[in-house]
Image (cartoon, rainbow, N blue to C red):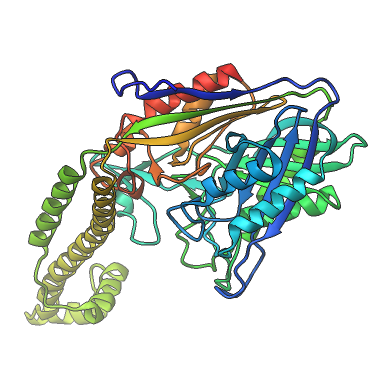
Length: 502
């Protein structure tokens, strides 16, 4: 294996190229799944699954695994040993090398069982033993109504993000929002009789909407998969692949006037995918190609500088807090009065006119004082909101600074995979890719039906663009990250090379 230096783009050579085109009509596939919902964690709203799709061209099968889980390692119940243990067991029992496994987490925040490894092996073996001759085809669909970019650009040039952990900046400070990727990547696999066997659909959006009961849920991908499976027929399994959803939220994510409910979003996505799947014509002449590589990325080295900058901004905001005569109990009715009737907030206009006629202006002077108090209190609220945003991201920087020091290495090795099934092209990465990364790769690759999935074969937290990573406004994607800004160009170059070889 040849390792390149950081100066040489910090790329590792492709460590394995496992690709043998199959002959027409020789492709086989099988599906399997197991429920992984933890029944004791929360009341179960809908089931969480591990699903396996084994595609075999007569040489070495490819195993595509999807998990209704938040991440593969680091976060949630999937242990850091999961991938290595899974690869060892599948190779031992089925003779399939670990490099042939592509494991994607939906990033839903449901709680899964602790025996997820054993259930994954069960699903893979079920799929392997159920292989039948198949034909397949690919396509695309669009759904623009269920997602929104959670980053906003501010009047001062900074960027902020939308989280339930803190408030957005004031509307007057927001000038633009980032893009979304409405494309749904589709792969349909049929038995030779034409009966559907599997449907793969790829889409970019955080599955963090939840359900009104607050129960355990696979979120919108679970509902979308149910729509697809119930409509395509008995025995079909729908596989959701999370895309570049790092900075993409469900639409109206911050809406405080309606219960959180992922089901309508999932229904919209499922129906859009279903329409696209039904338009696909399958054939038996497809081929299979998989490329695996290890990519060496530079770890972040600027934690201390960014931490110091946040501490300085926190001190500045604290100094700008202004003393007020009013508390919140007094502030709220005063604010309503002054917004409802700016000229006569304290009483009816008749009282003001009588006072003026009599030479007394007590109400007018009180209003002037109260306006100053309101402005001071509002300024303090805005400072408090900014302090909250800063503190949440400060804590993330401190956490990753400690992780980086403990790692004792300037490089972070990650697994990158390129997969072609027919003319369905997929490049994977273990980080929470933001949407612009995927859009750039699609444009540079210039090949239709090309998709990029994060959250795959590991987890290394957020991987924002270089511009996002150097944002001075401090958003979660910028701070909840282990890698230096240069990572983006390294991965994009590797991804485009892989696509070219597929």
